Each structure stands twice: as structure tokens, then as C-alpha cells.
Length: 377
Image 1 (cartoon, rainbow, N blue to C red):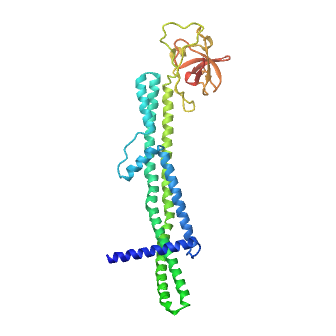
Image 2 (cartoon, one colour):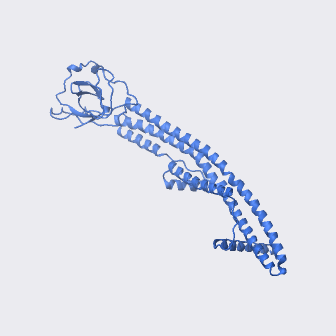
Image 3 (tube, helix red, strand yellow):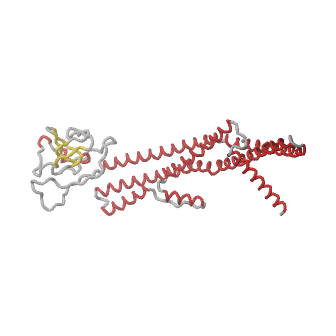
């Protein structure tokens, strides 16, 4: 008990001495031991590394998981050392909705077929996103967190100890200075000077030892940069793979939609023919295929192949205007080449594939795919 009381009293004395020294330094009434320029540069580099690592870590977490509530939940699971529950990605959830909608609308309908194809691609995109998030978390986020929660905490602890050693050293210097001033007045203070010099030597030794420990830790920041550089390369590789997969999935989807156009379907179920003055039946549209990716083979039927375009006349039901959405290069002489945003006249003939129309532009005439058109009333 006595030992504990003595230690408590000693610690209180040290704390009071440091507080006095710190206050006098702030007031400009005491001298302060300055660190060398190299040491100060190491401290600045460490602080800069810590600050930017925190910002990069936080923003990467936002990139991978934009929902702040989910991020907080995952943080709590991590702190409680519990497994984070598996969640579906936004792409996978969208895929689920599209498949369910296709089943309700009818998977055999053009819209249902397209929903199924797009839903399948969204599911693949969601899986790629999940893999990217997992890879980025392991290869990039975890090393940054480990630095902040491990190395940086150790550095901060040793820096606080160094600051205390520095305060003790400067307090000993102040006491020695006062003892020497008193010695000049009376020889009775010679013992106090000797005691102050001994305390100063001990404080200087402790300070130098702690400064060396802290210096070694700060110099390790360079190794931290090398490690973070490697992790950054792995993050870029993961992100490149993710976007490359997404791009390839979308190319595949466009090609599939090209094989399943079903984008403009005429109303073949009407019970009576429309008047001659009315427009052709209403049509519905889905996503067209960008022609630069590739075009499906001409699905024209044998009836269309036998048509003589020179003898083709507009039907009695009339024609419609259409705006061209994309450039189209004619595959043969029976087709009409198109330029984006131009206006043409279109109509359908009995026996034609519903995905093709006859287009006219001046004296030119030929078959055109409906996926490249926006029909106007």
C-alpha cells in the first residue's frame, strides 16, 4: 500500500511538472527542445499519410457501398467480430424483378423474352459487382484499415511518450537553471545543482532513446507507401476486370436482342379491317440494337425474297413516316441503307416478317429493319 501511494504521489508530481512546463511554453516563459529538421519531416509525412489514408478509405467504402446505413451495420458486425449477412446487389435485385415481370407478362411474348434476356444479364452484372466488392475489400480496404488501426496507433502512442519525455527533459533543464542561479547566491544549493544535473542526464537519456524508437517507426512510413502502392495496383486490376466483364456482358446482350428483335409487333388480332383513311395498327417498341456491335442475319422470308421491289406499291391502308434512329448499311440490293435522324416513308406488305418494313426515300426503295426506326403517327 505504501509503495502504491508513493508511486501515485510520484506520478502526480511528474504530471504537475509536465503541466507547468507545457503552460510556460505556451506563454513563452520557458524554452522548448526542438526536434531536428529530418525528424520534423518524418512527422509531417506520417501525418499526411494518415490523413489521406482515412479519406481514401472512407471514399472507397462509399464507392463500394453507397448506402450509409448498410455501411454502419457492416461496421458494427465487424467490431462485434460477427459475420456480415449476405446481401443481393442492386443488379441482382433488378434481375429478379425483371424475371418475375416476364413471367407475368408471358415469357413467350416479345417483351417477356427481352425482360428475361436483360434480367439474365443484370444478374451476371450483379455477380461481377459482388466479386469486385469482395476483392476490393480484401486487397485494398483491409490493408488501409490495418495501417490505421495497427501501425498508426503504435506511432501515435510512441509520439505521445516522446512528447512527455521532451517535457520532462525541458523541465529538468529549467530546474537546473534555477539551481545554478541560486548557487551563485549561496553555496548551500550545491547539492541541488548536483541533483538537477543527474535528473537532466537521466531525462536526456530517456528522451534520446524514445526519439530513436519513434524515428524508426516514422521511417517505416516509406514501407507503408510501398505496401499501399501494391494494394492500389490490385484495386485497379479488380476494377478493370469488373468493368471489362460488364462491357462484355452488355455486348452479348445487344447481340441477343438482335436475334430476338420483337420490337415492333402489328396488331393481327383485330376483328375488322381498319378504314382506308386510318393509320396502320399501333406498334410497341423496346431497346434497339446499336449497329456498330453487330447485326443479326436478314430474317426475311422466302416470300420477301421473291418480291420485286420495282413492282411493290404502297398498300391501300396507307403509309407512315418514320425517323431513323441509327445508321444502317444495306446487306444486299433488296435493302435500303439508312442514315440516323433522316425521315423516310414506311409500310408493310402481306407475308412480310413483322420485324421488317418497306422503306422509301425519294426514288429509292428497299427493306428496312424496324429496330432502327421510330414510327411516327
